[in-house]
Length: 152
Image 1 (tube, rainbow, N blue to C red):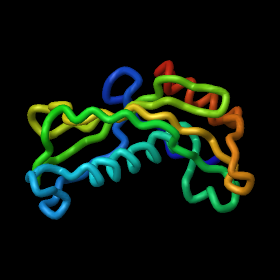
Image 2 (cartoon, one colour):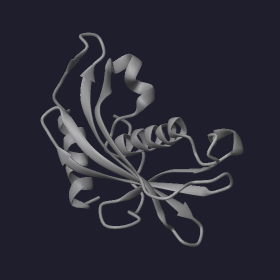
Image 3 (cartoon, one colour):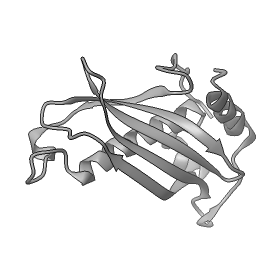
Image 4 (spheres, rainbow, N blue to C red):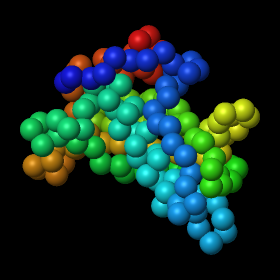
């Protein structure tokens, strides 16, 4: 695993994992960010969080290891409108034998930093050949535990 250096947390056990802007074409008929576009931001943030723990997406074809999302709970708290700048901050909540539970919050910035949406998800470490769950690798587990305890 060739993971990037771990940046300073933005709050205890929470790291910045994405930054974007809401474009007009991402909004729905009600004028706010469409659900499908929230999921894209959450997905990007998840890969950045996994990278902090040592999983690098570009290595998937060679390692034949990946992740399968098995649960998402999304709370839409405040509207996001065209032109809003968003920062995603993520944390690991729990580690299982083959899975991790994580949370990503979308914050409107600059200025108010209002929390606009939250996703709590469960991802299972996955063998891409056999299409079955596999144990978390020891090095990944150690880094994820350090993130969970904010020891990195």
